[in-house]
Amino acid sequence: MTAQGLDFGISTELRGEMRQWRNRAAIVGVIGLALTAVGFVAVSPNQFYRSYLWSYIFVIGLTLGPMAWLMLQYLTGGNWGVVVRRPAEAAARTLPLVAVMFLPVVVGMNNLYEWMPVHHPVLPANKQIWLTPMFVLIRVVVYFAGWLLLAWYLNRWSAQEDREGGTAAHRKLGMIAGPGIVFWALAVTFFSIDWILSLEPGWFSTMFPLLMIASEALTAMAFLITLLVLLSYRKPLSDVLTPRILHDLGKLLLAMVMVWAYFSFSQFLIIWAGNLPEEVPYYVVRLKNGWDLMALVLVFGHFALPFALLLSRDLKRNFKLLASIAVFILCMRLVDLYWQISPYFRKEGFGISWMDITAPVGLIGIWLAIFLTQLEKRPLLPPNEPTIEEVLAHGE
Image (cartoon, rainbow, N blue to C red; front, side, top):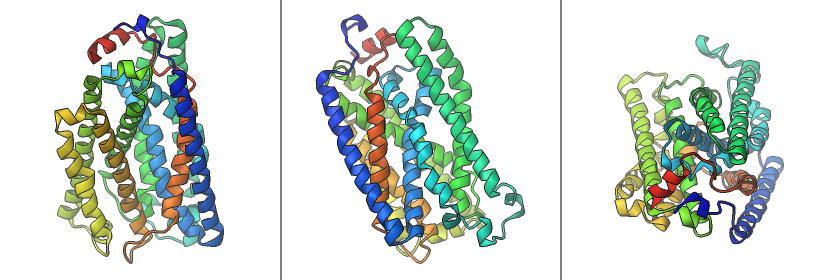
């Protein structure tokens, strides 16, 4: 199989199906957000912001995680990354929407964070300056500005490569990927501290930012595998996505499941061994009153079961089975984020609001609609990728 004999554009049949997916996602998203807005007005603004926050953290993982895999592929040159490049670029192009989606979190800061001045908090001395509201907002502007700039350059030079061919644009992409992935990791680190860890300003964990980085990478790989399997039933991916390439992606999914488990257990072990009064309340709340059952679900559903299944070579080469596991992992990612964030607001015990369902449905639906709109705009594979022939040969 050679690149000259293939058309990497989206086929008519697939384009029609993608538009159906987009329309359905948009309808579901609008209904979900409308119901959540009703909850804000008629039920509780506080519950609205709480449900919105953890749902938003999942959506930003869907956006930023693929961008990290995209830059990693430019750095390593792996054949696995060429098939995920266009979905990753499309995810990066949703960043303007995701930045706008963040505004309700900013508006609801007084409702979410006890370090806001309206609550007259007593903060640790080393956090009094860091958690100044204006300083927090300045940092979030820096994060999004950097992410948007990276997304713009990654897409601009990729489009240039499509138009002109050659290696000039590809070299630029490789040059920006190194510093870009460093900025991405640092920004995700501080973003997770500012907007998740600071929910409990007296608590700290050196492992938590690493856990969030691994979580975003896992979320992204599970999403990309699910999407590629859906697209593989039509041209052009039906000619390119083979069990061998899917096996490579399945190994990366297994690796990220293991990394997530390692960071999660490391954080627990460090806090358990240290037994410091500033640290242990985080787990004390999350390991009783119903939250402990959710923790067990995560141990078995987020790690043990996917780990055991993904060890199978045959399973990683089976399109439907691997996609099913990827979808299951995405569901576990939602459970994990709920377990991380919601107990702070429900210290009396496990509980769930109907807005905890409508908020993620609404945000994910709208995001998917915009993502699919972006994915439609360019060929599903880069025709002038310098290693495209090697990639096609690798899949045979």
